[in-house]
Structures are given as C-alpha cells and as structure tokens.
Image (cartoon, rainbow, N blue to C red; front, side, top):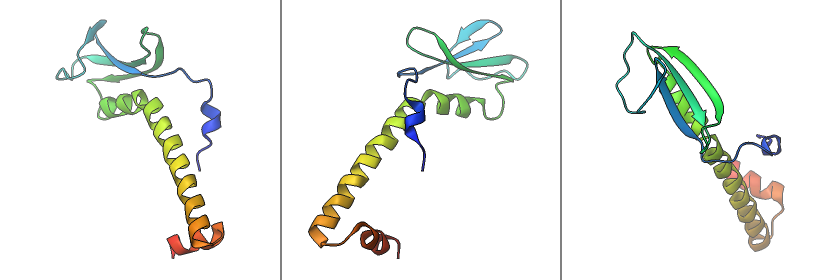
Length: 110
C-alpha cells in the first residue's frame, strides 16, 4: 500500500503542462518535430517548475510521462478518496453482516 503521508507538503495542484521547443513555449497538442529537442515542464499556476523532462523529438513517452506527472495531485486525491470509501464500506459490512474484518476480507477475496 502506498504511504500517502510522505506527500504531505507537496505543491498544491492544479499542475499544468508547459512544452518548450527551441526556447519557445508551444501548445501541448502541437505535432512534434523529430529534429527539435522538446523540454516538458510540469508547472504550478504561477509557472514555478515542479518537474522537467527533456527528450529529443518529443521522445516516445514524453507526452504520457509529463501528463502523468501533471496529474499527480489528482491521482493522490483519488487514492485518498477511494481509501475513505473502502474504509466506510468495510465498517458498514462488519456492522450489518456481524462479521469481523478478517471474515469480510476472506469473503471478498475467496
């Protein structure tokens, strides 16, 4: 299980994707030219750089990796939301089925 406490204090979202081509910021949906070296930056709303990926020609995975980095705050919130939901569901099941946690988990995973 991921220890989400280690992310406490991270730069708050939203995080945005900024793409630079030869020193100029370009649109994220611009077709990549393999002769250029693109610099992908994940930035906050004030353009402070959180992470940077530099790959010639846009790289094979650069778009996907940069988008995954930019979505990190959203993914973290979703993990926390789903954990709360799972905990509430487990408590409901234990109360209404009169079973303990181990019995409920055994029922789910058999």
